[in-house]
Image (cartoon, rainbow, N blue to C red; front, side, top):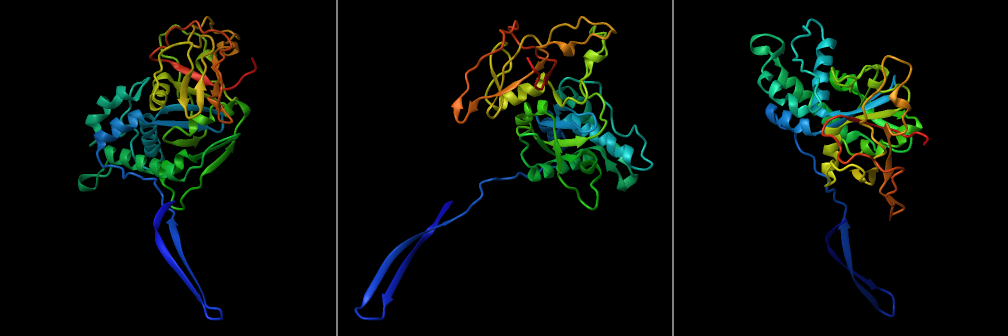
Length: 324
């Protein structure tokens, strides 16, 4: 509400005895303080900005989700675009090596902006134009998306963002399982939310790290867990004015959301190709807790002291909710 001036009110009665009323009225008006920024048409700035921004990708068919750099998502969308088009070779969009942080691929993509995706001569459609267009589409979804809460996740269909259907698209409302309730607060803090089906493995263990168990290296399906890389979590923590470094200390991940580190989720896998799996460990799946409850601070009470003195710079964490 903003002050919109004053008005003088006067009223005179015609009947006897003569009466008069004089008053002053204060006027207010509604004003929105939300501002939106127009996306720039600079490819290099796009790479720098989206490498720091974050997105959540939810696989509705496999019931699992991923917190990834927005730049990595845009690159995957670019490949999906060429696959959906007719007659475009699949090598027109550059491929990059698996990476733990999107900042590692900026130098790889910077000189490739003028790569032709399709068309010839003066009618070329360039890779930088494709990336800028996809980013604009994602920015448009942010303005329309609703806040996820309870057991409801809101997002936009991955391929609708990529292919821009002429009929437009609707926001998707998805019911999630109880484990997802533990990380839905993170959804409110990211820069894009997309929904897909049969995505595959977005985050896996690095090749040659000695982990032999396939099941330990893949995020379980049908449990609505969220896998997040540590560089992505570090950016969320940085936005809240903190630092992701010390083990055993509560870390603010998002507004009113604290990560209480349990045990050592980065412990070495001891399993081979057997039926045993790390997912049975009590401290592998991490939990988020509210910072405040009904406006009152919630005391930090770790289930067990963490043996970690410092959180690694790279790696991944899985959030959900399990019985102790």
